[in-house]
Image (cartoon, rainbow, N blue to C red; front, side, top):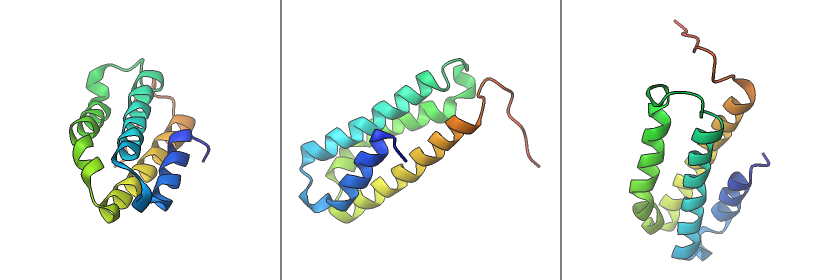
Length: 107
């Protein structure tokens, strides 16, 4: 995976104990910016009603940023691992799906 934010998450996960609060803030801000860019660049043509999930995710990262930064090393690493998984999935979706099409409902 060559997305810079994922590379940054992986590097941070390997060195969590040595990260300063400023380093953590910068990483969380990078993740937040990636999500905002994804909404604009990938989902930009879709109305907000079809992107509520992304808007809620962006808001959650924004509102929880301080708590994420203040998390202890083990919890911070765990949160970063989950963000990494999420961003990998979003990138896979970006590459494999035309968001302007109607969604396929599977039953």
